[in-house]
Amino acid sequence: MPVFKLVAWSVPKTKEFFMRLKQIVTSFDRRCLLGVNLVPVGSAVSVTGRWQPSSGSQQDFEVLASSCEIVATDADPRYSSLSPDLLRKNLHLRARSVAFSALLRLRSKLFFKIHEYFINRGYVHIDTPMLTFNDCEGAGETFSVATTSCSKDSDFFSKKDVFLSVSGQLHLEAMVSGLSSVYTISTGLRADKQQSRNHLSEFKMLEVEIAFCDNLDQLLTVCEDVLLSSVRYFINDPNILKDFESLSPFSSVDHLATLRSIADSPPFPRVPYADALRLLVSKNQKVSPSGLSKQNEAFLVIICKLVRHFSYFSTNLFFHFKVNYYNSPVFITHFPSDQKPFYTLRSWDEKLTESFDLLCPFVGELASGSLRETSADKLRSRSPNIEWYTELRERGKPISGGFGMGFDRKLQLLLGIANIKDTVPFPRWFKHCQC
Image 1 (cartoon, rainbow, N blue to C red):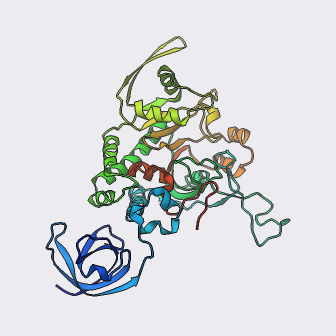
Image 2 (image 1 turned 180 degrees about the vertical axis):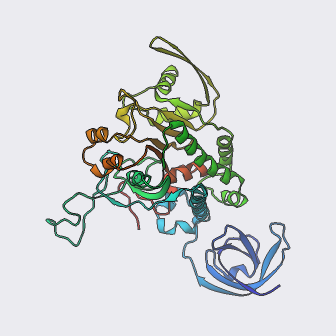
Image 3 (image 1 turned 135 degrees about the horizontal axis):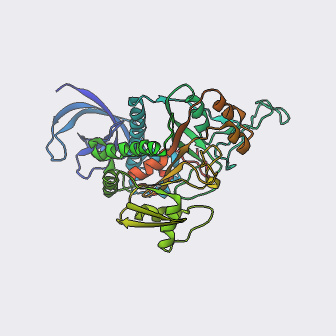
């Protein structure tokens, strides 16, 4: 066999005369016949040698080295023994962990598969802006932007307050004035002080907008298929499964059972918000007038594999739930108007919205979406300060629908990662901004 060069990092090997190499880019290991004491664990090495049939059972071939150059050494290569919490305190070193490097490869593959999904279906990817005058969600949890080069009494953007974007949704709506289907995977930034395992201040968001979408069920079907395509990819691709085996202590191959149950569970239940409240009350769950709590969401995910039967008598709704107790994603639909943003299409009496949240095992709310309000007058009455957005209704924009799906939460669901801060290389959250 011809001589070739292999660049890699060394990892521990118990047999005296073998060094195990962790290759760049791929998740595959190679064994190299070399004096192991000559190469410190964790070293970056450049090995020249030949392939030969392996004498062991773990692989078919191994490398017979003729030379080995130590490119760099590691002063403290104990990453495999460190917990996720300890690794999180040294973000700049996490890629040295075999488990975390496997996680990052899986994150990269998910990016690729999402882009592939939408491009193959004719969607156009849009680069939405990071700087904006808009607070899309109206929650006020935005970062304001200031310059270091201008004096305090001068304004870089024409005396308007400028924020870092929380969402690109409003800009995607502008694009469906001329493009039928668009999407983006963009960075959102939210000044959110929550420090739960499901929250970040800087996050990735998949957002989708579809022109001429006038039916909420159509939107739910697209959202469901987006999730299921990723789930099926993760449970069927052999290279994905190889990296899954390396995820401990962040996750376990046992999580694949949860993914298989999701893959087998469509169509996901579609439960109106009012019915979800009745179900919670019937199961002695505490419900707040302001909306579903995290505990409510978790309960609905566990219980909501539902077949619903309705009968109407006068103004009373009688319903019966047939329940299978296993984790199933569930759509909660038609939220009250005061729980959804101003741009959401409302019922004739303004009480309910054509909206949904997708609740999933492990993460709770994964996606949220709606049909968009078509009346310029109604938008002006609800939010008079975004005239450019309102004007779209008078300049040929058709009715549209769309949703946002948290990319980091999706990865958290797919991999069974307990803390969302372990799904990104450099997480930012309240009081924490390393590197």
